[in-house]
Length: 118
Image (cartoon, rainbow, N blue to C red; front, side):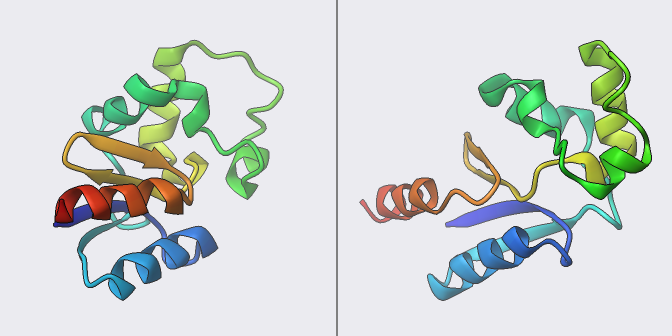
C-alpha cells in the first residue's frame, strides 16, 4: 500500500496524517505544496468527488491576505488560484488508488487500510 499526501509540514493536520500512516507502516509519497504546487489534473480528482469549494480553506491566512472573501470567481478562476496559491487548499489532500480525501479523514483511511489487507 502506498498513499500520496499533499500538504505542508507546518500544517497540524498534515503532520497528524503523516503520523497516522507511519504508525501503520504505510509508504507515503509526500508532496510539499511549498516546494511544488499540485497540478490542475491532480486537483481535478478531488473536485470530481467533493466539488471545488470543498478544496478552498476559507479560514486560511493566505485566503485573508489575498482578500478572496470579497470577490466572486468562477470555477476556472478558483482552479487557477488553487494551482498558483497552494496555501489556499484544505490540507491534507490524500489519495490511495482511486480514492481521495480532503482534510484529516482518519475513519476513511482506516477503511483503506482494511480494504488493502482484505
